Amino acid sequence: MKNMYFITALSLFVLAGCSYNEAGSPDVSGVKAEIWATMNDSQSQTRAYGKTWEDGDYIGVTVGSTNEVRSTNIKYQYAGTENSPFIPAEANTDIYVRASAEVPATAYYPYNGENGTAPGILDISTETAYQVPEEQSKIDYMFAKTTTSISNPQINLAFEHMMSQVVFELNATDKETTISNLAFKLEGVATTGTFDTATGTVSPKEEKGEISTPELSGVTTTSLILVPQTVTGVNIEILLNNVYYLAKVETLTLEPKYKYTYTIALDNTEEVPTLSFTGVTITDWTNSNPIEITAEKSIPEIKPITVNDAPAWGAGDEQSTEADKKQETTASDKTEF
Figure 1 (tube, one colour):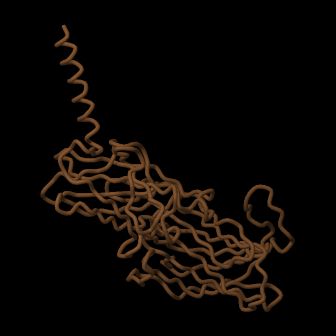
Figure 2 (cartoon, helix red, strand yellow; figure 1 turned 90 degrees about the vertical axis):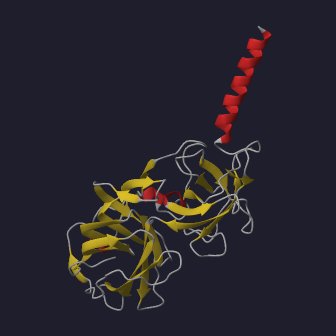
């Protein structure tokens, strides 16, 4: 009877050990991995939303192929210093590299789920609530992939932004202009999508909606993080000093990993201020290197028109009589943003 209890206990111990080893543990043959997370080719551990990783940033790391025992979705955290590797977020969950041949290593941000279980495809939302600066990191979905082996256990993960970033830059003719409030709204864009944590692929969902930047004062540059997509018939509404403006974009194309900087000129030397789009710059989100994506550079000047009612912009907004002026322009075919 004692032998039976002993064998049963030993079996449970072995089973528990096998399950535990998926996350890597000291009793497994292999070499403990070092996890370093950088942004593209940068030598420092930077990321796109801000300039560096921050306390509370977690990534999910998977090492090995599906044909072998592997470490799956192991939660690692920023160690708090730029010159240190990431560390396991939970005790005794280090990843151990066991293969002599090169095996895949992938990682994604932000972390989801639990150690040992692949999170799969996640639903994502870029609604206005996430577009304030302190919340944008939650929708800055990133992905990295490389290889590792016992002879090369230092895993250098070069993360890339899998979303698209749109930046609005306002330049006033009168440099003394006071910006009391400024905001941008996109209507007719995909606000939701999916993120594949195994491949880094971000895909838009079919339903369309609107996304706004926060309404700010004294600020002339603001941005949105969006799901990569190509859509037609997009409206860009601009709220500037309690006056509304409208631009119509025939085709809006946003590619993953890239930043689209839209420059807008404000001429407030006349009684009725006017806006005009002066150009669009498309660059790699991280390195700011110009890329070859077809874009129409001849964006027409915004022409003012008057309407009887201003568009709704948040609940309970009070607008001055100037807000009843709405400016409109029609962008040329396939203007890309």
